[in-house]
Every structure is written in C-alpha cells, then in structure tokens.
Image (cartoon, rainbow, N blue to C red; front, side, top):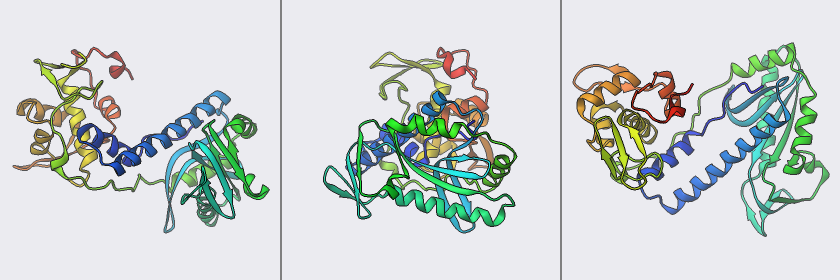
Length: 328
C-alpha cells in the first residue's frame, strides 16, 4: 500500500501559479515543462502499481528525508522485510546512450546522470543502518516510464540498475510477491522518523510582474462578470463562487510569496480589489489561522493545496454547482 501521497512539488506549484498570473520567460517555460513531465511520469508509475497491486507492500512516495546531515529526495521507496528499494522515476523520451559514465540524447551530451543520482541516494540511506536494530540491504533502480524511451548502454553492470517501460509490470509483479511483515513495519517507522517537508525554496518573483484579480478556473481568463455570490467567465461561460476564487487567490499568494505574510492588504492586492473587505475578512477567518493580531493582522494556512484546504476547512457553499469540489 502507498504510505504517503504524491503531490506536486513546491517548485511545480510555483511555476504553474506564475504561468497563470504572468508571461513566463524562456527559462521559466522550459523549467515548467520539465517539472510537469517529471510529475506526469510519477503519476504513470503510481498507476502501474495500482494495476499490478500493492496491498501487501509498503511504498513511500515523493519523500524528503533528513538523515544525519544529509538531505535527500526519493521518488519512490519500497520497504521490504530486510530490504529498501529505491526507485528513481524518469519520464525521458528519445534515443539515449550511456557510455563511459556520460549520458547523451540524440547525439547531444547531457549533464544529468540518473544512475549516479540513484546510487547517491542509496549511499545516503546506508546511514540508517547505524540507528536501526533491524539489518537490511539497499537496492536501487532507475525506472524509465516513457514507452518512447530507447537506451543503448555500455555494460551489464549498469544495465541491472535500469528498468524500462516494457519491463515495468514484470519488475513490479516480482516485487509484489513479497509481503511486508514486522521487519518492514520497523523499517518504515525508521523512515518516518526522518521525513521532512519539501525544503526547496522557490525563486523570488517581483510583485510588479503579477497580474492581480480573480481568474477563470477553466480557461484562465481574467475577464469575469461578478455576480453577488458567483463569477461568470465572459470567455467560456464557466461559473465559480467568489468564496472559491478568494481562497484560490489566498493560496496563489502563499505559493508565489512564501516569505511574505498573508494579510488583508496583500490578499486585497492579489484579488485586485474585486472582493469586498468584509467578505474577504470572513474568508480569511474561515480558511486561515490568525497568527498576529492588531492593525497589521497576519494569517497562516494549513496547506497551499487548494482542494485540500477547501476540504479541511469545510467548504460547503450552497452556490457551488461543481459537486466534485464538495465531495470528500
């Protein structure tokens, strides 16, 4: 079973919100494309596990760990009775070659080395042995999830650490024959004690770049007609509640400016003044936690994940027509 959720990274969240509220530079567009491609590959990996079955396994997804002075990120970590299996997930496509320790794609050398990356991660996990009373070994695989990936590799030694899409289900079925018992439970507890939040800090963005106001959740247009409790997009006709869109603006601000306080002034700014002060204060008090009182009151939010925040704070607007948003 999956022990952790797979969520978008802070960096991907940042670039997606930035894309909605400004014109991206070339470097930002390339970075966003790469981040989306990587996350899509991880979702495919998870779906393959769902198809194969993982009820008897313990699988951590999208992990950040702090082990002694080392910080590491793991796409997937499978916990067995006496074994940890690191899966580095890549969504590459094209003609790749690995020779003499270097990678190239379509004849052009690239700097990223997935095999070395997986090896470094496995090496750092060895440190867990020092604090664990349960002995275990560490295995590692780089899983290339894209069916349009082709690899020529120079040695059997390196090839044994690689799984391509055509072999993924065979590989997973082989692992699924194992059963997680007391040893795996003990190892998973050791892993849990090392989990940390995503430590990556998104790049700073100038406030002057940001387009303020409410926007359509379907087509992204800022051309909205404001009704009493709802907005209607003048481009596609999609309708959303003002409550939903205000909470979306709050999470947008938190993602774009993690170092700044969530205040009435800042949320009034990012909503473009389209939400009345009284209504905005009501939503801040409902969806946020007051961290500082006074003339310059400041708030915090439990999560910048919009759907999760709406769920835990009990979003139940009678004006909401999209029942999927209200569903648990």
